[in-house]
Image (cartoon, rainbow, N blue to C red; front, side, top):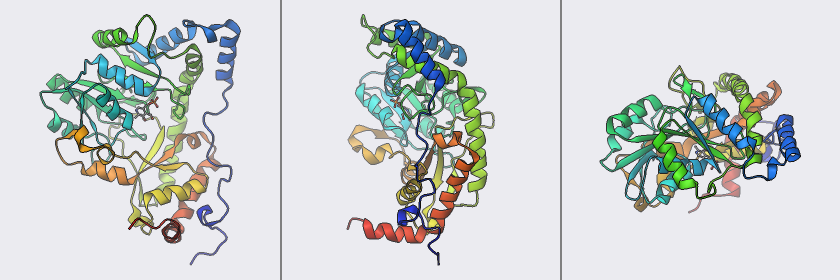
Length: 394
Ligand SMILES: Cc1ncc(COP(=O)(O)O)c(C=O)c1O
């Protein structure tokens, strides 16, 4: 029986972090200085100033790719990458059934058919074997996303795609600056994409980029976006905000990796919280989220969503993962070639920790562990409380 001294916040106790999770982005003097300079020199109000060009060159150089095409969001970047690969109405595009919703919507927006495949049992990233089985003469492209700090098996996916003459889009929205099999994330396929959206590791509030070394892909994108004006632009001010963050990204990613390895060690005793596995040892992930496979049986049956809500009440930014695409869209809108059982498990069981705390102090990281420990200890009581306040539908 638990006494009341350490009662979880969700049951009326004092939150471990009453101030809530760290706000993002952090105050950033270098970004402020860049923006001030853009205000001083008037580039803030121009169609064409120095920042967009500088950022495109910086991204191209740091990825070792021919073209970095800046655009208005990661979502737009995926659409442009699909267009760059020549995807058109009636084509098929393969993607994981557990992926970001906009990737699915982008395929539909082009009049193409999403073909949903399963994720692998260990990593819950898109399964190369499932891709091989799902290809058809109509397959035009594959979208492979790195999610929740876990790296998709791009080398194998690219090998399968090349053998079939199919293009690969590597979605690195959650992995900027990471290394995949010794190469920069976003450069392993025919086109890679980045996001500078408001919650991302490098943020301009909105924004994105397509990375490619294929001249035909870049050319198709430019033909589509350049209409006398850029139809999907990233502004001078957004580029000004991204540049200093990109220059510090490797150091920040390294700091987050240290925090993650410490957290994983500290959380190891919680058998129901298994970090998603990274395949290749030659990879260095970036942690936009730290993903876990949640097993409710290790927490007195407490559901994943209620576990996350209890941790949020403690001021720790745990959230359920994505809804799987086959669970949230009519089956008329996609094709499947095989069972999606691991993606269904991912839909039910992915739990993520949002990144800002990974740049925090040791005390911040200890609070994460203390919150998990507290919620775990009171799991049965919390489950009973949720059953009282929100009984499951009959
Ligand atoms: C995997 C993935 N791809 C694409 C995007 C889209 O990025 P944006 O929010 O910039 O449109 C996101 C955004 O969260 C994402 O997580």
